[in-house]
Length: 304
Image (tube, rainbow, N blue to C red; front, side):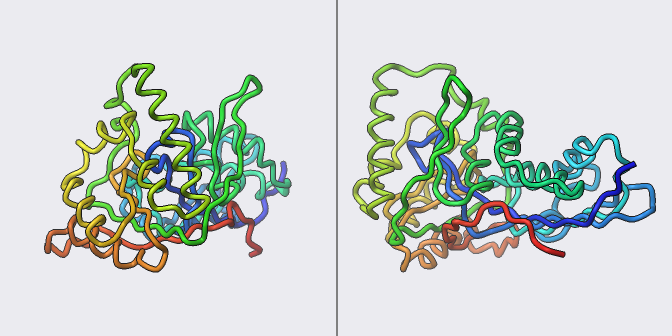
């Protein structure tokens, strides 16, 4: 029987869509899921959750643990799986995609196997049903995913350092499945054409740090209006962000968080304004708001 080794991996969170980039565009940001496994002779896998993961129910299925047990099915997975995250769960920062990327690579690492990024992405893509969160979490940076006859293709895109990001979310999360059920089955040819033009503007705006192009590109009718209805006080938060100087504010991923694009020097102020609009003076510790910085660092293996 193969003996498992200690291993540790770290994966960044991601925001996806950014308006017109529905199911296509994602950006790695500087909040992380850190996962380690230490084998022992107990005969069982003990899971330790820290940070934002403490909010998960005790009997809630753990993505990393399930992947680890499935991927090393011919070996008794006995040891401690320790997970620390500062990524809000169910709030549109790709927590599930980060967990899938971390789980797949951790399963390789504990068996002494090298990284297989193509297989890791393919597995996460198939499980998620889209790759706009998995790609930046795995590879870092601003990424686009395009469907081809040979499967999804991941592309690296340019991002101006002038572009900053501010994030805020209410105390309640949103199920990605529920958010997807709100989307229409089909859209008109005209709307599809308009959306393509907006995506081009968004990509050019992000590359150049052009506020006007980003403002155009953040507009969306494919998914944003349908998901906004699930987010309490969303309109007020968007107004607060824009009044604080944001270039655009839109839904982060499937929600419930909102992401603002702004001058990087103003990201803290925009985040504070959006957080205050969500919280409305209640002092709710589960209501969050903070600035985020893009990161080129995707999945990393960390020596133990």
